[in-house]
Image (cartoon, rainbow, N blue to C red; front, side, top):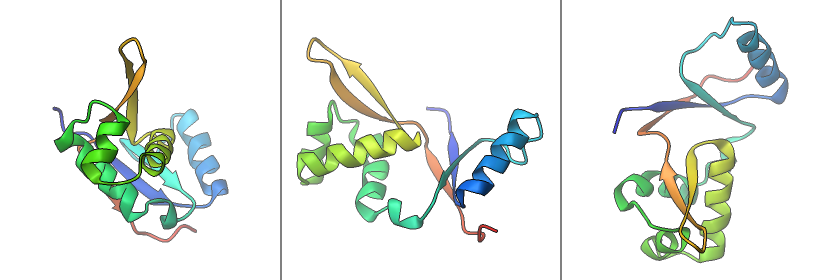
Length: 117
């Protein structure tokens, strides 16, 4: 697997919009993917564990992931959907039952600790 890293930053929505406007004009300040969140609270230890374990477990479904983590399916499902919405994981549908398979999109995550201004 090719090494791919994402940068996670906490910043207000106005700053995210400003960065996007620059990027659309071809004046992006950073290379690679930047995922912004409004608060560090959204990256709970349970969600970080999911991100860390998907590449090694390679679960065949969200149910298999929840069983491996020994966590309630409903909570793991909600966390996986949230992380997919952020773009940190990919969900691939397979089989007749259209089983969702969580796949890590990145091999590493860089955390931007600079204060958002």
